[in-house]
Amino acid sequence: RCTEVIDCDSEAVVVKARALTEGLPTERERAVALFYFVRDEIRHNPYAPLHDRDGYRASATLEAGNGFCQLKAILLVALCRAVGIPARIGFVDVRDHLLSDSFKDMIGGVNVLPYHGYAELFIEGRWIHVSPAYDLATCRKNRFVPVEFDGMNDAKDSLLDQDGRPHMEHVEDHGQYADLPWEDMQDYYRKWIAQLGLDWDEMTVKGERIRQGRS
Image (cartoon, rainbow, N blue to C red):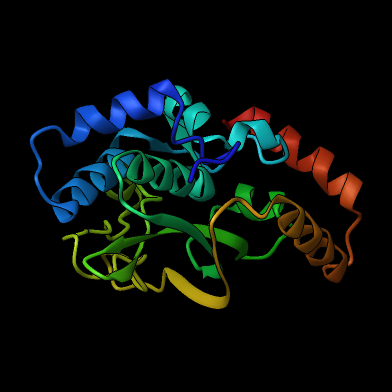
């Protein structure tokens, strides 16, 4: 079903989903087309606004043309729902061994990303894990391994980069949701910052300053 954030009934999302899947007869083919649109045509932007709930709407990300992992996953879920493919959003804490210094500074000096977002699509009777976060241009620039999706198998972030260096490591799975668990996320972020011995308000101001300078 549609929600305020996963607004799969918005005109922009419906029109885009139908255009991308026109003439594709199977759920698998439609899911693959939607995945590659979100992966590559929506630029990965880790510095997109974090604390504006309205900015998490699928239609907002579609209009902006960029977003971080959670925003891109929400958009993929909405596009899939718009053409009748059941979909939900999932979250996992990941250790990103290749984070930039500026991004680590923004999240408290660590390389663990809380609530990294991915999508789960229900295709041919089973749920499939799909991560559309890194577009092909970002992968080429940073030598990440692009996530490929065939509509049948999980498409997860790669453990290693193209040079064999550690990249994405799953730390803690938070499960899957039919809608964005905004309050749960905010509570978790606050506890996360407190465990690092940092002040939430100070980190929020600092983070937004870095985002505005880099986005």
